[in-house]
Amino acid sequence: MSREGVTPQSEDFSAWYNELVIKAQLVDRGPVRGTMVIRPYGYRVWELLQADLDRRIKDAGHDNACFPLFIPESYLKREAEHVEGFSPELAVVTIAGGKELEEPLVVRPTSETVIGEYMAKWIDSHRDLPLLLNQWANVVRWEMRPRMFLRTTEFLWQEGHTAHLDEDDAMRETMWALDAYASVARELAAMPVIAGEKTPGERFAGAVRTYTIEAMMRDGRALQSGTSHYLGTNFAKAFEIQYQDEAGALQLAHTTSWGLSTRLIGGVIMTHGDDKGLVLPPRLAPYQVVIVPIGRKEQGERTAAEARKLGAAIRSMGIRVHVDDNRPQLSPGFKFNEWEMRGVPVRVELGARDLEAGVATVARRLPTVEGQGKEQIPLDKVPELLPGILADFQSFLLARAEAFREERTAAVDSWDAFTAQVATGWARAFHCGRSECEDEIKAETAATPRVIPAEAPEETGVCVKCGAPSAYGKRVIFGKAY
Image (cartoon, rainbow, N blue to C red; front, top):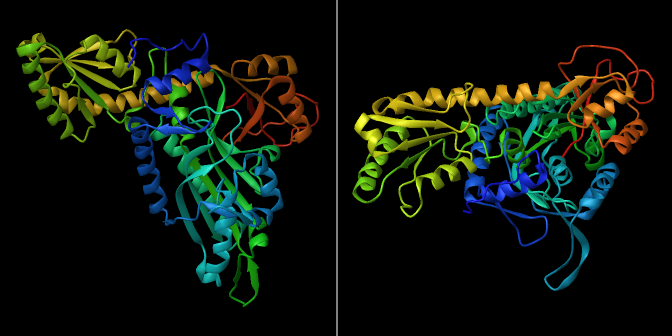
């Protein structure tokens, strides 16, 4: 790894991000424009996230399935609003096996249409409902302005698809998924997301209602980090997803879909990272602790042996630990900088003097108390103290991110105050709900309505842009977004 750091966030946040994802060994650029190769270190972050979310999904009664990557173009056209919403992003196969296909095939952008086709086959009676499916998959959306993790032509995600007897049951499912995403973001990623509904102009194509979790990045922009959609009977009508009710009458099922993707890793990077590099929450860190033995030749062999013993003791506590003992050509300082760049929450330094004193030097990636840097801990106490240190660091990152968001968020009532606020953060403002007004706001400020917060207090007022009455009975969060 190069000894050079990354561009400071204050100079160019975009350059900082683009350099960091490469230097922290999370990704490499793929051979096709807009694609990415997720390197082992980055993929391990995804695996940790995936394992936790997959457990929640299964615990709630869903079954994993796998549907085709190729979808007949006619399937998408059956739900007109859906295909219109996705048309610019579709990758279409017209030639296969050396011959032109009779019907073009769309490379999966999302699976509502193909899963809807099979829901119609599998559902006959009210006894078949609810049908709760989930899929871990890759999807393709042709991206004109790619950025690793945030917007790539191909990315990884999970997509839940469910069918229900009525609106009430489908809405319970929709909100369950939203709550699950908010919990994962807060508990694993230490991202203090705000959950709520999207405005009609920001809804998923074909949905009746779209819900979102929104997080603030360290440049003040918003990141949509997971969405859950109540689809009503729109897809049921298009694909004839029907069931026979208890009276023997045919009824349309109510369906939902919900997804969370590798975009959340981009959110982790931009929520916590600093000018030294990545900062990983312990629960998502491939290595929660890295031990760096210090010394050369015989002294180095001794500290490395002790480091391996310490590593084994730490591992027995259920902690993901790595002992950096196989690169003697690199100086300790280089290793310290490298592991800071890669965001390891806790680094343990072990030198000859430490061993003589019976201590280890423990350094957190960020000081959790003002002025607190490295500290020396008795060597035999390190394994039992580390779980608490890691838990404190996880909580610290969440609180730090929440404080940053609150500093950059303000309620505004005038247009001048609105434009000034969204230049560096989020504005809480009244909005008339008209998509034409949203378009005007975006054209003048590049800000969009991110979320109608579920937990915001009820308030009335007039639209910050046009002066018409507020449509939502509360303030809407506006901001520039990724």
